[in-house]
Image (cartoon, rainbow, N blue to C red; front, top):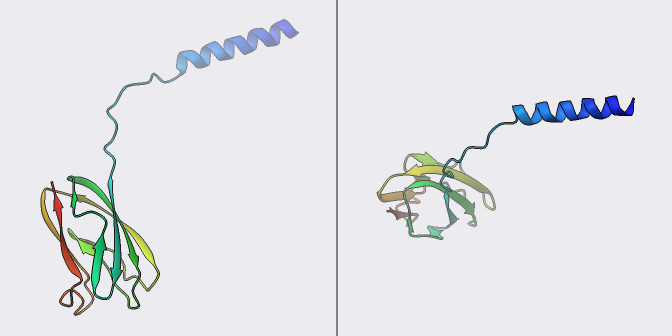
Length: 118
Protein backbone atom coordinates (compact mmCIF):
# COMPACT_ATOMS: atom_id res chain seq x y z
CA UNK A 1 0.00 0.00 0.00
CA UNK A 2 2.86 2.40 0.84
CA UNK A 3 4.52 1.65 -2.49
CA UNK A 4 1.29 2.38 -4.34
CA UNK A 5 0.81 5.72 -2.51
CA UNK A 6 4.44 6.64 -3.20
CA UNK A 7 4.06 5.73 -6.91
CA UNK A 8 0.87 7.77 -7.18
CA UNK A 9 2.59 10.75 -5.53
CA UNK A 10 5.50 10.48 -7.99
CA UNK A 11 3.09 10.33 -10.92
CA UNK A 12 1.23 13.45 -9.74
CA UNK A 13 4.52 15.30 -9.20
CA UNK A 14 5.85 14.35 -12.64
CA UNK A 15 2.59 15.31 -14.32
CA UNK A 16 2.63 18.66 -12.51
CA UNK A 17 6.18 19.36 -13.66
CA UNK A 18 5.25 18.65 -17.27
CA UNK A 19 2.32 21.05 -17.10
CA UNK A 20 4.16 23.75 -15.14
CA UNK A 21 4.31 27.05 -17.01
CA UNK A 22 7.59 27.88 -18.67
CA UNK A 23 9.12 31.11 -17.43
CA UNK A 24 9.73 33.67 -20.14
CA UNK A 25 11.97 36.63 -19.83
CA UNK A 26 9.97 39.79 -20.42
CA UNK A 27 11.46 43.20 -19.87
CA UNK A 28 10.41 44.63 -16.53
CA UNK A 29 7.58 47.12 -16.68
CA UNK A 30 8.85 50.64 -16.13
CA UNK A 31 8.25 51.84 -12.63
CA UNK A 32 6.28 55.00 -12.00
CA UNK A 33 7.98 58.12 -10.68
CA UNK A 34 6.46 59.33 -7.41
CA UNK A 35 5.99 63.04 -6.74
CA UNK A 36 4.87 64.20 -3.29
CA UNK A 37 2.57 67.24 -3.46
CA UNK A 38 1.60 69.36 -0.47
CA UNK A 39 -1.24 71.86 -0.81
CA UNK A 40 -1.51 74.87 1.53
CA UNK A 41 -2.92 78.37 1.29
CA UNK A 42 -2.04 79.40 -1.43
CA UNK A 43 0.76 77.32 -2.85
CA UNK A 44 1.83 73.82 -3.82
CA UNK A 45 5.10 72.28 -2.75
CA UNK A 46 6.30 69.45 -5.02
CA UNK A 47 9.11 67.02 -4.22
CA UNK A 48 10.42 67.07 -7.81
CA UNK A 49 10.55 69.84 -10.39
CA UNK A 50 11.40 67.44 -13.23
CA UNK A 51 10.39 63.85 -14.05
CA UNK A 52 10.98 61.39 -16.89
CA UNK A 53 8.14 60.89 -19.34
CA UNK A 54 5.78 58.02 -18.62
CA UNK A 55 3.91 56.92 -15.52
CA UNK A 56 3.89 59.38 -12.63
CA UNK A 57 2.18 58.94 -9.26
CA UNK A 58 1.27 62.16 -7.45
CA UNK A 59 0.68 61.71 -3.72
CA UNK A 60 -1.27 64.85 -2.86
CA UNK A 61 -1.84 65.94 0.76
CA UNK A 62 -3.84 68.98 1.84
CA UNK A 63 -2.01 70.51 4.80
CA UNK A 64 -3.96 73.74 4.55
CA UNK A 65 -7.08 74.96 6.34
CA UNK A 66 -9.27 75.14 3.19
CA UNK A 67 -10.32 72.48 0.66
CA UNK A 68 -8.00 72.13 -2.36
CA UNK A 69 -7.56 69.91 -5.40
CA UNK A 70 -4.69 69.26 -7.80
CA UNK A 71 -5.01 69.15 -11.59
CA UNK A 72 -2.31 68.21 -14.10
CA UNK A 73 -2.42 66.93 -17.69
CA UNK A 74 -6.20 66.54 -17.69
CA UNK A 75 -6.23 64.50 -14.45
CA UNK A 76 -7.63 65.89 -11.21
CA UNK A 77 -7.96 64.81 -7.60
CA UNK A 78 -11.29 65.12 -5.84
CA UNK A 79 -11.68 68.13 -3.55
CA UNK A 80 -9.49 67.36 -0.54
CA UNK A 81 -10.58 68.54 2.87
CA UNK A 82 -7.84 69.68 5.28
CA UNK A 83 -5.67 66.75 6.37
CA UNK A 84 -6.83 64.44 3.55
CA UNK A 85 -4.68 62.80 0.88
CA UNK A 86 -5.21 61.29 -2.56
CA UNK A 87 -3.02 59.37 -4.99
CA UNK A 88 -3.33 60.53 -8.61
CA UNK A 89 -1.82 58.56 -11.48
CA UNK A 90 -1.00 60.09 -14.85
CA UNK A 91 1.02 59.21 -17.92
CA UNK A 92 2.97 62.29 -18.97
CA UNK A 93 4.56 63.14 -22.29
CA UNK A 94 7.61 65.37 -22.77
CA UNK A 95 7.22 69.07 -22.18
CA UNK A 96 6.12 71.48 -19.46
CA UNK A 97 2.99 70.37 -17.61
CA UNK A 98 1.08 73.06 -15.73
CA UNK A 99 -0.59 72.11 -12.46
CA UNK A 100 -3.24 74.15 -10.63
CA UNK A 101 -5.81 74.13 -7.85
CA UNK A 102 -9.19 74.53 -9.58
CA UNK A 103 -10.94 76.14 -6.58
CA UNK A 104 -12.09 79.58 -7.69
CA UNK A 105 -9.34 82.15 -7.12
CA UNK A 106 -6.76 79.70 -5.74
CA UNK A 107 -4.59 79.47 -8.88
CA UNK A 108 -4.65 83.27 -9.20
CA UNK A 109 -3.52 83.48 -5.57
CA UNK A 110 -0.48 81.27 -6.32
CA UNK A 111 -1.66 77.65 -6.33
CA UNK A 112 -0.10 76.80 -9.67
CA UNK A 113 3.19 75.69 -11.10
CA UNK A 114 4.90 73.77 -13.85
CA UNK A 115 6.49 70.33 -13.91
CA UNK A 116 9.18 69.61 -16.52
CA UNK A 117 8.83 66.24 -18.21
CA UNK A 118 11.93 64.97 -20.07
